[in-house]
Length: 319
Ligand SMILES: NC(=O)c1ccc[n+]([C@@H]2O[C@H](COP(=O)([O-])OP(=O)(O)OC[C@H]3O[C@@H](n4cnc5c(N)ncnc54)[C@H](O)[C@@H]3O)[C@@H](O)[C@H]2O)c1
Image 1 (cartoon, rainbow, N blue to C red):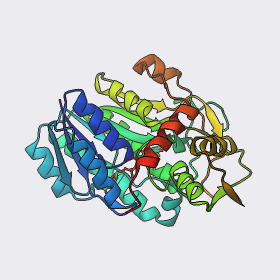
Image 2 (image 1 turned 90 degrees about the horizontal axis):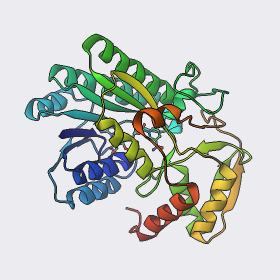
Image 3 (image 1 turned 30 degrees about the vertical axis):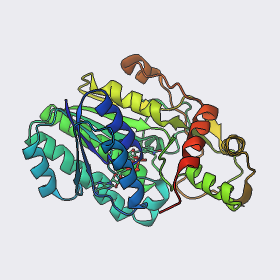
Image 4 (image 1 turned 45 degrees about the horizontal axis):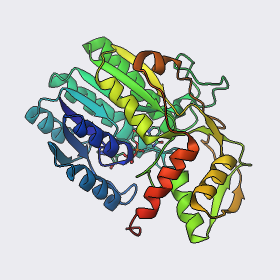
């Protein structure tokens, strides 16, 4: 298959691009290499993909640029589009809600429009567990109401889900929306807690811990997420939403203590109040994704953090 991965120079996208290539597909990555975090890290990811020496092309361009999208779709007959490019993260979305909206919502419209115009029938699109907002029913199921987002990022992902439904209903596109639950592992974004903490702990610097450590996250190891996305590439859905989680909720305190164990070093903790936009808990109900995708996360937090630290220690100095 010819597969377009938007955001393929990033954390999740680069792992996915590698897996698709190893499975025998041809992969195009569209990414603008923006400086949300250091583009050198994204170039390293692209170099790792290219090193596989399989049919791979990198196209540098922004989702906002519909001419770039149209040019690409006119040139290549894609069988599927896996749309991961986005401005990720809750806190950055509170600082720059306009950017979040423009990239995540308008960008998704542009991708859906390009797919529709050029006859691509199937898309898999990244959503997020943050759409559940302050949902109090645990675990979070796809059928739960999602009208309580608490950040512009969560709202942008909800808008993407609605747009996916529109393009399915009006134009018959086959669309899977994937709600990822806190993804970690090698190449994790530097703005995310595990990567940030690991850096500070190894330098002997304090880590900022928001709240009393009792907030819980359903951490999902990157290979499990890639397994879930790959399972979507071989089925048709009409329109469906799936949770992809790790199946165990880990408190922040426990996360820090497992990370300390994996690093062999104690953290110095700088405790701060909870931040706006932070949800107290995420927990994925995986019944539907297990039944429909055969999705079953395999890597628990101890093993996942061990593998993360193994990668972390091999990294060259920060660019
Ligand atoms: N990592 C997580 O824990 C997590 C959790 C839930 C959802 N998600 C979603 O998964 C997707 C991938 O996340 P990630 O953690 O790999 O993030 P990432 O930032 O590492 O990857 C996103 C990539 O998209 C590219 N990009 C951003 N804006 C673009 C634009 N306007 N045009 C072209 N390319 C652009 C970036 O350069 C980057 O390489 C995102 O949609 C994110 O919202 C991630």
